[in-house]
Length: 330
Image 1 (cartoon, helix red, strand yellow):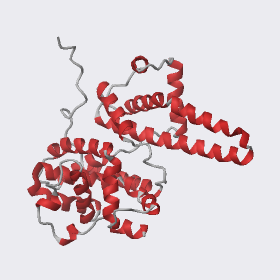
Image 2: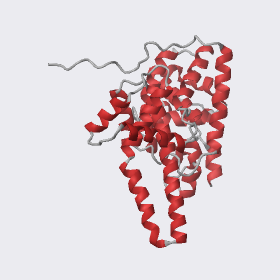
Image 3: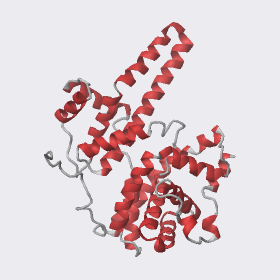
Image 4: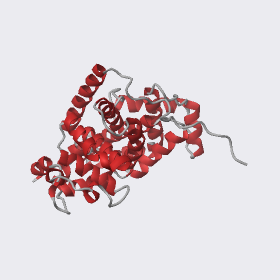
């Protein structure tokens, strides 16, 4: 006998495009563009090191189990990523100090590392719970729900420990947890495309964009590695080139245009060129960069039948993308 029907995951049923004023869209796009530029400038060497497939999959599956909307799962991944980077930086800093001052206290660093490892699942769940509190549309996950879930995995915690975990995350990030996600960039660009007369309906693109964005999160490293190799035209990038490419990994506007372009090709490849040209006009990102990113996404999702293989693309689109990054890396 089938079990009880679970509440549906927050879906696209109530999602609408074209109901926001153009002034609001323009202000939002400008604000996101400024945030993105700042994030790219401040990209540090360790960012992205905790967006591992198993961690991302855990967050996605937990969000689905708790019937949270997709934006919450992306927000949770970004909160967890930044929190873990802060913790790793703190451990490394203390290890250097202890190693310099008194080598016999080096075990203190190991204890901090062990504590972070032991509490990782608790911190991950806290990040999901915090992300749920930021959403106006998703339900807030109660402490009882969280504690029951952790108990099912064999972790016994009290409500006080759960609250302390949330507070640790908040303090570590200076209470700045309302972080931008790639989905926000995708949705605002779809709004603009709709007003600009894009031939592919925004709602059709939106559904496909969500699927591809999940894929990019789950295949983050392979997709960006292929982009790096394409940008430097070398199959074995140096460590320095990889470190300088971090800024590309943190460029959510670039990711958004790549996601939309790939979605447009899947939905209606005849309109792909028009969508790419619209995206270039809106964001100022080079046509070649958009084409290369969409190609990377599609080759990791649907295989080789991609824009670069099925359509004749003008020379400026066929050129290797991200040349400016490559020139900086050499």
